[in-house]
Image (tube, rainbow, N blue to C red; front, side, top):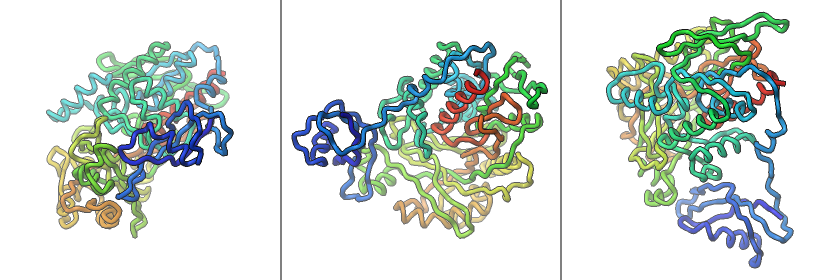
Amino acid sequence: MRYRINQIKLNVGQSRDDIPKAIRKKLRKPELKIYDMQIVKESVDARKKHDIRLVYTVDFSCREKLSLESPSNRDYDSMAKKTGPWDYDKRPVIAGFGPCGMFTALILAEAGKRPVVIERGQSVDERVKSVEKFWSEGVLDPESNVQFGEGGAGTFSDGKLTTGIKDIRISKVLKEFTEAGAHEEILYKQKPHIGTDKLRDIVKNIRHKIESLGGNIFFDTRLDGIITEESAEGRRIKGVKLLQRGAGIIELETDSLVLAIGHSARDTFEMLFREGFKMEQKPFSIGVRIEHLQKDIDRAQYGSAVLAETLGAADYKLNHRCQNGRGVYTFCMCPGGSVINAASERHTAVTNGMSNSDRKGIYANSGLLVDVLREDFPSEHPLAGVEFQRKYERLAYENGKGNLPKTKYKNFRENNNDAVRKSIPEFAAESIIEAMPFFGKKLLGFDSDEAVLTAVETRSSSPVRILRDSDHQSDIKGIFPAGEGPGYAGGIMSAAVDGIKTAEKILNVIFL
């Protein structure tokens, strides 16, 4: 018989080899023979600083009948085998090779559909060179940068795989990441992450797998137009216009296109609006990056900075509802990480954070964000949120004299003319100042005068939603908006899962 047991606790530093003993103790069965043990989940319980524990969920086999639940044997691959085969000639096109486009392509490739992926940015190795040149020399490539290129915006991040969704497809995403080179601990860690340094090889390995299955990925190639025709059910895609760097416009015939374009593809949003796609405004957030010494965060979370050597650099997640009704929250927390310039347009300043896999940096950082509502936008135009973002990105560039403006929290709080404060809306500054003492009570030292703030963070989510139906199709048939850019995901995992769902829809709508 195979069982699952929760809440198996070990002391910090205690060997995992003691898990069977802890299971026997919890079940009060000292003679129980345990076989084929597998850790399903590992988390840290740090609520009692004097008694921090590692908490496990474990699957195991034994010959006795126990009053425990059996683990589910369902996984994505066993489910997916029921969905083929198909016979069809035309190749689906996927615009964007971030997590959404990557996993859409992988599922379609595994189904024998030989997808064509177009990515406006460069392959990851060339992209890294472009990004490092921007950081060191200030030379921005608008087509290949922190936002655009192989792996999407997530390639220059912490590679966090946490998500609020529950979906069987998550197991598929994690499995593919581990097969591509990620550590197997992502399969059971409560807050799994990969790290910027590891992601670069992982996205290449997934690309190679797609290519080995008959797919093609074209870099330096941007979606520049849609070719449609009238049908009995309305407008339908007939092909795409592609702009290849150094080669001009190319037309490609297709009857299925996935818009996995990412949340920063503003020129593509504008093109799609001109083409008549139904869109609507979507609320998002604006704010700053906040930095503390990582040892101070470790001390606040664990009671001792020394424990970070065993437990790993501490993280946090904080939120507060202000009197004005706006939420203030931390986002994309990067333990032992760096604050980076993530601009994708000239004469703008955009900040974000990233960490390497070991999270050994001196500083901790996270987004400190405030709700932006539709009524804050300058008009009712579907793309008004984009203009709202641009306004403050340009302000930040000016206030930082071409760089990211930085300040200490004390100055931000007390000086209305502070460069960072002037780079965000006043409602956002006031909301942050109101929330900080509450955050300081939840996490000792968070509201320190010495905390460093960097402006401006605007790209936590897309400011627009491209409407789609229950089959994931837009009002132009055969076109499938998916992932973060069109407003259906937030983060690596949810974007990848939406990509898998979209591939399933294509296989059932287009190829059946």
